[in-house]
Length: 509
Image 1 (cartoon, helix red, strand yellow):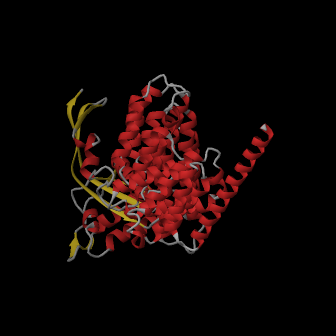
Image 2 (cartoon, rainbow, N blue to C red; image 1 turned 180 degrees about the vertical axis):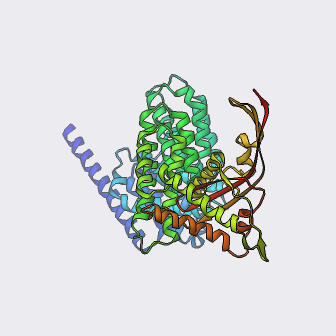
Image 3 (cartoon, helix red, strand yellow; image 1 turned 135 degrees about the vertical axis):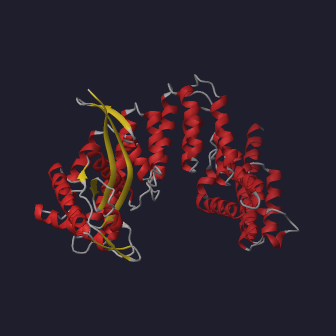
């Protein structure tokens, strides 16, 4: 008798499986005929009899997805077919514990995932709340939950960065300081900062690290997450055209992790990378075809080098690179060349001053001969510093755009502002009472091979200043009150600085 009952039970099970298989086949036929409403209704009937009929859930979700392509046709049946699709997939995810259906139909399900993301991107500006709900259901359906970070990711996706930051900062604030890998929020804490960097929330990122590095600084994994996020922000900012963000992020990152040699090495590599790329662009052009556009690559190279040295002044690799590039391109003259430039510039300037000339400032004015000027090392230093700045930041202006310094600011940063000083003779007082600055560009030192060529270069430069029409340069050079001068050069940028300097012995020993 028991044997008969067992055989009967087996037959019933087989009939049930056969019946369900036939029902699923009918669902596929309805779907293929594009009778999506009937397919959903039939799926519901099958599910009501067997809540683990996984294929029925799948075909129900698929039918709703098809309705979502033309939702206006199905308004009598459902107001939001895409949401119904995601709801059904949420249930399927729970029932499909072995992910059998998700693996078997992964290509079709991936289309649903990509379409939902596309649709959210279309509506997130006008309906942020609905976008968030779609993404929450999508995340659950496809098993992409990351615990405490899940909602923050969704907020970032729809562009609600304020809420994203609140979620993440709350996570770091409420988690215990001595947290370990067994805690449910541990993984999120190692990735929260990186989420900010990936979404270009750089100011928020640096605020987060500044505030929570002291709390989690001894936790290797969380602290590594902080460093990786900071490095990603620096690397991303590397693409900034004028490199201001790259500089600022690098500087702030080194203030946070300057004692970490590996971190500093990574930042150094990024800066050496843009320096090498820029100079390589310049090397690609030959001397015979170079234009002003090519010279910008050379100027950029030295600008990047200067910025890098400012934030990493002790880097031996940057010092080596600077020495190599200065030697290769002769950007700043050697001490021997400086002495020749001093000699030739004084000769050229004083020749014009001694003989007198005509200056075209808009009206041609005859300038009488005036006294010769002498060399001054302070004026030379002022001129040289401004020439370097002009070359590195590619401008030819009297006001430094980086510091807003004008010529008088530069003078007033030295003893020429009016100071007393002691010598063996006694107490002296020195002051510049009148100044003038002349700027030049386009006369580069790179191709100079000897003193005679350097002499010609300086003479031609001074002549250009003197004969250029509608310019104040000639009149400045011929100003009778000037007693001293200094000249500086970097690349193709030149600065000639004049001053009327009074030096008086006010107390003889």
